[in-house]
Amino acid sequence: MRRSLFFIIIGLGGAAILVSLGVWQVQRLAWKQAIIADIEARIDAEPVALPDAPDPARDAYLPVEASGTWADGFLRVLVSQKEIGAGYRIIAPLETAQGRILVDRGFIPTDADVVSVTGQVTLRGNLQWPQESDGFTPAPDLARNIWFARDVDAMASVLETRPLLVVAREVNGESAGVMPLPVETAGIPNDHLQYAITWFSLAALWLAMSLTFVMRRKLNVHSKG
Image 1 (cartoon, one colour):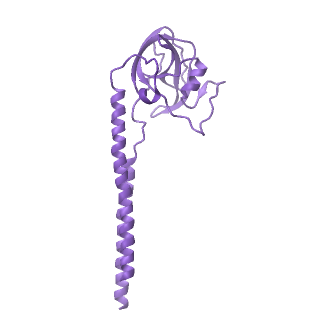
Image 2 (cartoon, helix red, strand yellow):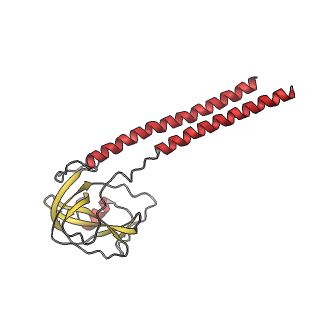
Image 3 (cartoon, one colour):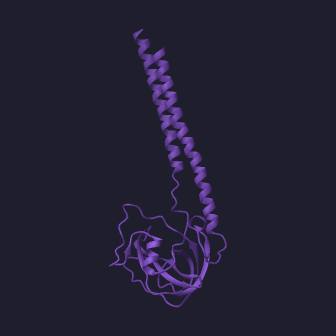
């Protein structure tokens, strides 16, 4: 009897731990959904002028409108798009009344030629300071003008701009075949529902296995008796 009680306690205790992990993931899901909803509201707000002293924490995703003249040069950042394949984000400098800034013009396939744009342009987009680099990110291949992450500070240094990146959403001017890739929340990971289902499923499996073990033990005891 004591041994059966011990296994029952182990079964219930293990299931309780697994259920608590599932509940924690549900709480994390609500937290992440609130963050994503806040970001979406900020992305879709009415655009404002470029701030004089932008703050990455305060102004991330801030919608802005900027007018200026395209400056010489561009950088290519290697990316991949669903149903299209590999390509580049084109980062170009724009001379504005608030100084020279970086503009993420959008996407072109790897086999397309980049056409530099000139002249006046008005665009709408969102400020962003992407965190795409880590210890495994290759250094940019400056000889071939290929980057593997959008490093705002490094790109600003090469193109001699302010460390300020606007990801274009709408461009009123020559696009030269570049497709805008506006800021959106689809790329923000939110796997907490799957994690919660996994923990709850493990809890149910643990209980079923524990119950089966206890029942078999009782049957063995009765058969011996």
